[in-house]
Image (cartoon, rainbow, N blue to C red; front, side, top):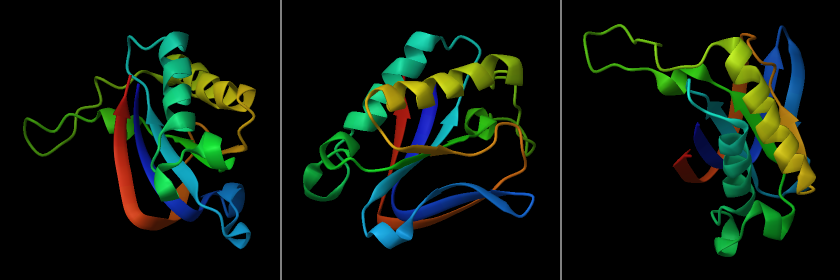
Length: 145
């Protein structure tokens, strides 16, 4: 699994004009926006490992983690993280897992975070989404399991 994780002050996901997930800017707290991609050989173990890494990653103020600050997370599935652009100009999506494989694993990441007590919002798997974020820093990390 692969995630691009950004420290944010606010973030939201909109589908068909409806906000389906957000990190509330009114709280004044930092949070994490995690764009999550799945490849063919990923397993629930990878999903749990990614959730653990996200929850304990020390990229918030004072080198603290979401676990330290009870910071909210917004998890958005993004198959394009496995694009291959080494040849030509058109990305290949061969490394991205198909929806029936990827969706349960993204759900597993969310559920694993929730078992830690995390506040987790999500996008809508497979939907065309508009993702807005106010990056803080900016701090953006690529995490792979």
